[in-house]
Figure 1 (cartoon, rainbow, N blue to C red):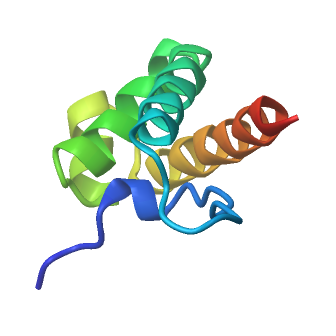
Figure 2: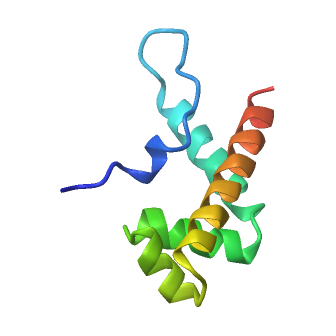
Length: 91
């Protein structure tokens, strides 16, 4: 079973006009990169392993030397911070 793409977890508001322009895509990519850069190294590693390497929580925990529960918590906190950062970028 294929997991959903990592970017579907961080939901960005849809553009109100018709088709999004190429500059909008570039801006979103830059905003996402900035939000990832603001995470702590531990949170960034957990997000990277979970969504870029497509690992489950148990595997992320093993890779980072923490429990699966701690890995889920770290990922959850990181995504919350990213949502706040991305919402602020919209303002």
